[in-house]
Length: 330
Image (cartoon, rainbow, N blue to C red; front, side):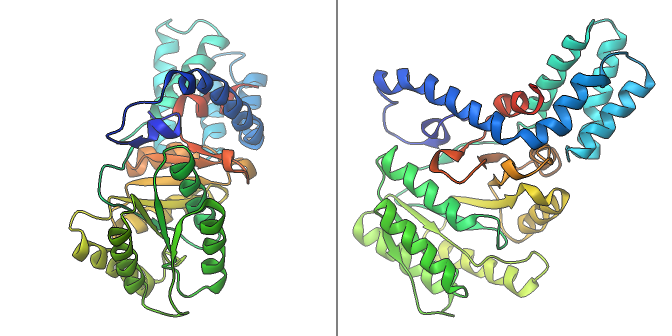
């Protein structure tokens, strides 16, 4: 699973040099500390409860309370049932002798549940087209800007941003600010213009200018608004007319604070377009961090990026092991 930006992206270029590799453990450690600190609400809802009481004695009440705790954290009923059944079986066979053993094993099972599919993003296309989707308020435009920053400054890629959300002037302005800040090309159109035309022009421009990556924003739409979901399909078809195998990556931003509603959003977006990965934002503001596991297990779509704050470093490739540790370590 990807733990760094260089591990997230697939390129034909050689791996990072030794100096960069030596710096990475410190950066990983720093990010884990931020992850742990910023997921305090989820950890308090889950880890503290477990440490305080759940595993003091092993009986039917123990497993019931564990189920309640995991479901409260939005791990999901199906995933919770599998994890608790596995733990109960292993405890009954004597494989887990203490509360510490049970907590360690729970951490392993949570991490395993969060793993699914291919968590990488392939940049070996000329250009690579990334389509960003999601409802308003999930942090989609900010996520685009942060991804562009890492592509430019860590991967050395040239990037073009396209303002396909032609209905919200604020979204276009925000994306333009990110383009200027990061130093990328920027394509926009008149308010209310056809989003498909913006996507078309962006790919044309990227080819003409030799840009490596095109990131196309789309209108933040509610999954219940069928005409907007139809428009999203249209944008995808326009892209495919230019590059048949594009978009090469379709990312869906989900606000973690919405819990199970975010899971339902993901299900319906997946029906409209082929979602390749989830960007799970605002994990620092929720006790429902377990939604990452529910998405992976119930949708089979990998969480590729998580957001735990406002800074550039607070958007990071998702690592299931670190995530499970951050949930449980009190």
